[in-house]
Amino acid sequence: MVFRQLLGAFGVGGPSVETVLASSHCRPGEYLAGEVRVQGGDRDAYLDQVVLSLVTEVEVEHDDQEGAGVLEFHRGAITGGFVIGAGQFHSIPFQLPIPWELPITEVHGRHLHGMAMGVRTELEVAGQLDKGDLDPVAVVPLPSQQRVLDAFAELGFGFKSADVEHGHIAGLHQELPFYQEIEFYAPPQYSGHIEEVELTFVASPHGLAVVLEADRRADLFSEGGDSFGRFQVSHEQALYMAWEHELTGWLQAVVGHLSGGHAVHGHHDPYGSYGHHHDPHGHQGGHGGPGWGGVAAGAVGGAAVGFAAGAVVNEMLDDDSDEDEAAEEAAEEAAEAVQAAAYQAAIEDAIEEAVEEAVEEAYEDAIEEAVEEAVEEAYEEAYEDAYEEAVESFEDED
Image 1 (cartoon, rainbow, N blue to C red):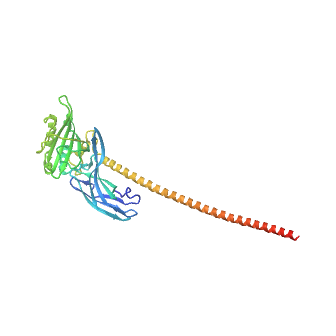
Image 2: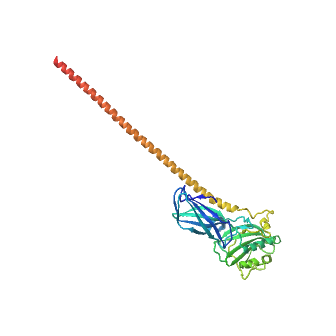
Image 3: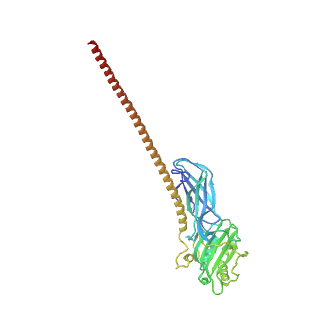
């Protein structure tokens, strides 16, 4: 991204910041590497610290109402305080640890519609944080997660959508305050019994939880509802597990109502209930696996409803850009106001000076005129007195 000027704490002419990622792709549990480049403005500035944070768009439910917002869920300072001189360039390398539970945003080079993930750069000055860059980040699946996604594709699931839900899943330990839901249309052979299947991954350094939710259709003999399942495996087990067989068994159990509405298939992980639930998405970067073109196509007229390249990311970035543009406009308006005030003050000073000069000049003119009048009057009086004295002297001689 290009350098973005920081206005909030510095005003016009402050330093600019640009974040450059070594790669815009990462996997859960890895590091996001890059550098923050700071370009000095037209004067020296002291920066308390540079902070990087991860943000994503999250769906929130409250009182039967749903909404979405941008949530910051991971942050850390990459440097302490330093002075950036006027016109000086300073580069700060970083390696930001990526949480294992990070939602997937890309699968086989295709962006998952509905997912948004980014890294934000902030500079702290005098206790105030000034927003800088917001750069999109593509999160690709772990190999263990990709194996499950490829099995979904092999079985004929059609990708529908994905999102991030605020909350926790009952019975699972989570570090992050949300979980991802990847939603699929059921394979054709189950379409009369199951409307959708939602997939959630909860990864950790020790293994992978694969959580499933099936939305069953109502029929003449049973009511509709949700059936749940969970598999808890190590990452190595996930790579070699016959997921196609396991998922088929779970689907047949759901259709056959074999577990009283809760179909449980897994490895040494009996799963009774499942709390908070969701709406799915998935993403990965790799060498196209089997069937993912079909998964992307979904079930609506064969159109690729699932993958809209970065639409939500762009919206999130646009919202952030709008905030920055508003800040820039406010700063420009403030600068114009200051300039106008200075211009007005200069005019007032000039008027005051002109008035003072006019008053002084008028005063001097008045004094000069008064002196002239006084001299003229004195001359006339002296002339008149001399004339009277001459007349009296002439009369005395007569």
